[in-house]
Amino acid sequence: MKTLHIAIIGTGVIATTKHIPNLIKRDDVEITVLCDVDTEKAQKVKEEFGLNGAVITPDWREAVRSKDVDVVHVCTPNPLHYEITMAAFENGKHVHCEKPIALNYRDAKTMADTAKASHLKFTTGTQWRYNPAPMRMKQMVKDGVFGDIFYIKSQQLRPRRLPAYGVYTSKELNGGGVLMDGGPHSIDLPMWLTDNYEVDSVRGVTFDKMKNFPEGNDLGPWDPKHFDVEDTAMAMITMKNGMLIYMETAWASNLIQPAMGVVAEICGNKAGADMVGPGFENHVRLTRVENGKLTTTTEKIDEQVDMNAYDINHWIDAIQNDGDPAVLPEQAVTVVRVVEAIYKSAATGETVHF
Ligand SMILES: NC(=O)c1ccc[n+]([C@@H]2O[C@H](COP(=O)([O-])OP(=O)(O)OC[C@H]3O[C@@H](n4cnc5c(N)ncnc54)[C@H](O)[C@@H]3O)[C@@H](O)[C@H]2O)c1
Image 1 (cartoon, rainbow, N blue to C red):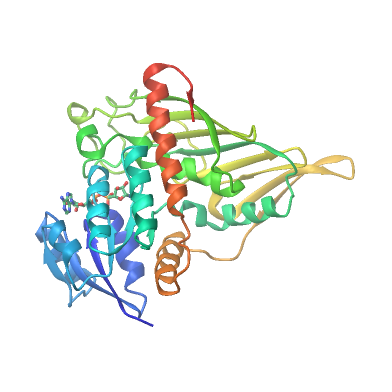
Image 2: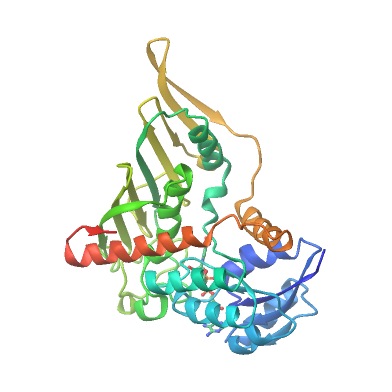
């Protein structure tokens, strides 16, 4: 098997918690370039992970052009995703680009179309689907446990976990707020569970009601003066087959929901299921009528799945074996299209039809 040479562009939180730790566990990859405008940060990352062979550069153009790179991982803030990814494709590199892959549908589609035309692999990081509970729920969907599924709710209401680091609260530098951050996960999960990315229409609302309440945030206080994005977003997404997805995502909620992560509820005419906390990621509660009586059972799934490792391993395997990555480019494109539609609907008060 070929050793894949990888460039990491952006050596911040997601690069150092998901990408690098899982890449270095494999013996068929080598991180050859670490790129960050903050080269001191990149140097620290190099030392922390013992990436002795990695060259450091502040210039992503140099990184994507490097002859010593086969694969580019784009872990920069969102507004850079499109340009870096397209430049990487032009230079014949496969790309794992963090979510959301782009700020708008047009760019996202261009990226996916370019990858396909260039026979290059392309994926993104909506890894919350790979927790044990959603994986079990997806199997139940396949087994027909729920019957005709007509409603799914997905939710990520973080009690007080606004990413106060980096550029998350700047529209200019991040492209948007929580809808660009938690939104892609909450949009992808219900679609992936039902293998249904056929959207009919979107009605969305966004709020910035928490912007002036920075106290008590897990990740430190933010500066309300530098906060021009939404902190909460909700949407009703109607699918072409009539199924409704209700999606909620928030950075700083006054509700203690089961999870920091993304949870889902599925409701069909034969049964319904949700992920219950604590331990939401590996508990599925199933409700249905058995022997004429409504019955609820909670199953703990013992199988261990590390969603971050799953994301990275499937990606590298897809390149090595010329297969499909776990998150397909067209799925990532639909997610961006829905994000865009939620912003549009929130701004106009109208339903956006696809
Ligand atoms: N999949 C997930 O669950 C998940 C979780 C967190 C973040 N993300 C995504 O990952 C991306 C980065 O988020 P983060 O939390 O790691 O942010 P971060 O601020 O911790 O890291 C971003 C890094 O990019 C660097 N950077 C900025 N401009 C650059 C440029 N022009 N060239 C090179 N480097 C540049 C910054 O210096 C910083 O080190 C975002 O798109 C975010 O949506 C995904």
